[in-house]
Amino acid sequence: MTFSITPHIGAGAFRFGISRPAIRAQVVETPQQFLQGGEDTDYYPSLGLFVYYNDAETCEALEFFRPARVLLGEISLLSLSKKKALALFAADPALEQDKAGYTCYQQGVGAYYEVSQRAESVIAFSPGYYDKSKEKLRELETLDVTEMSVDEIMAFLEKANPSKRS
Image (tube, rainbow, N blue to C red; front, side, top):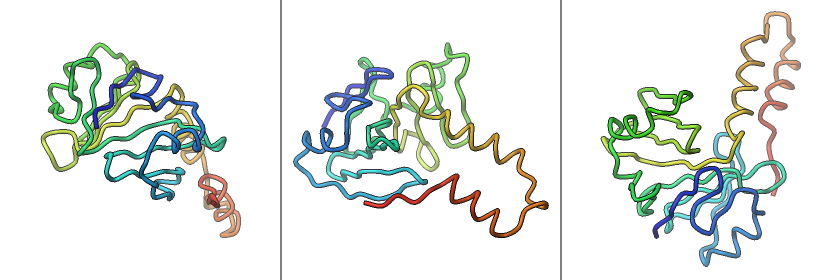
């Protein structure tokens, strides 16, 4: 299936801010539901799609992998080399890159390249999607665990990554 990304809006018929039931109503396949990295996720293997939801149960990011075809304009992001992707998104002053991939905040996309020369997955995300991660990182950087009991550390970790029940 081909998904055309509209930056900060969504991809194809999947829009950020749409409820889980509305997303599921658009897909014939029943998703596998689980927590991935602490995020509530629906997984559609035949589409090559993960749908991430926030606490309000609305879509906040879409991650694609093969067999999906993912376009930004006319550019196929899953087949794009990391070098070409970085050149394409170089105008973004907030562009982040590391060994494993990149995040382009201006276009609301990122990609993971750990093993392959081509993107292994591409993420399209809503504005503010990564803000909560940065906030948690800042909180962890200022945390002095030497002054905390084991119970306090466990409570902090639970607060930072609460389990969700379906």
